[in-house]
Image (cartoon, rainbow over all chains, first blue to last red):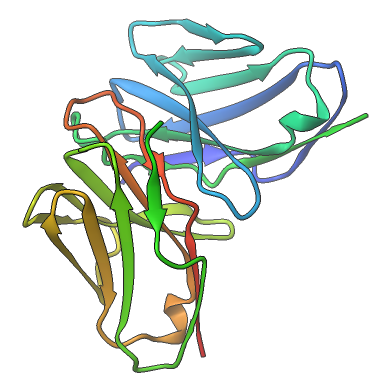
Length: 113
Length: 113
């Protein structure tokens, strides 16, 4: 079955540094991959989508890469701030466009002043 | 902005009760979804609907049913609540086209005692 793995341990970094989160998947070749942010007690909020033919996507301080050979996506936050502290989820769609996303368990990021 | 509203933030129910979780979206989206989120397991898809009166099972449909009588409303029904259904329930919607992000509500935390 399709499986998505994210680092279950929290990532602690210092303000101003770059945070890098990893998403690995198996048994699937997704056409695209999405990243979401989730704050405690709230629903996930969409951040970025990257397609299989895109190596990299940027949005302000966020950057996502997608390596279909390694079956891996990396999510970077540059110049991190305490307000970036949250859980970040990656998701892919095995349903061929119905948006029936399957999600990783998420990685909790804590940015310390 | 798309708004997905879940009727309750917190619910406490007894084992064996019939439970209704309601979700409404205001952006005329075709697709609607119910996920549950448990620590370490991530979001798991229970049911989804791609049109009024249409529904399909997700990965963990057992013990649940759904209803979509109007485009904007998608209800999740626990026919006979059990303690293992204690969880955070998240509703989401998306346009009918592929490669679209999901828009989530803020969740209903259900406790079954």
